[in-house]
Length: 137
Image 1: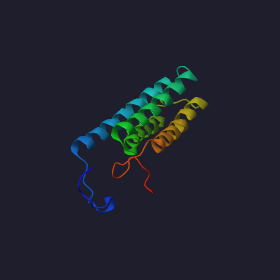
Image 2: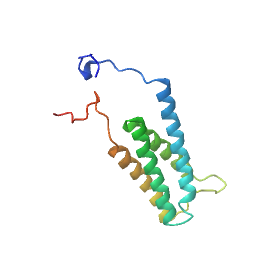
Image 3: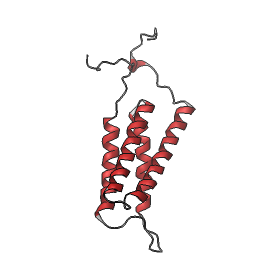
Image 4: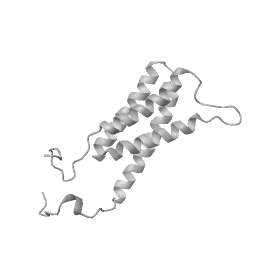
C-alpha cells in the first residue's frame, strides 16, 4: 500500500492513459467482430449456432472485464457487439438483409443484449483502494 492516507473519495480523478484508451477501443472493435461472426453463425446450425454465438459473446464480455479489472471492459465489448448487431438488422433499399424474421434471429438479438448486460453486471468489480474486503466493513 502507498503511504498516502488521503481518503479515496478525496483524491483527484486522473484521466485514463493512452494505452488504456487504446485497449478499450480494441475491445470495442473485438466486440463488433464477435457480433458479425455471431450473426453469421447463429442461423447456420440452429440451435447450436445460436448457443455458440451467445457463449462466445459471454466469454468475451467476462474476459474483457477480468483483463481490464473493471466492468467498463465488458461494457466496451457489449457496446461494440450491440452497435454492429443493431446496424446489421437494418434492411437496405435493395431488399437485402442479414437476419431472417424467425425466432432464432430474435433470440440472438434479445438474448445477446441480455447476455451482455448480465455478464457486464456480474463481472467482478474493483475495490477503490484494492483491498479484498467489502466496502461496508
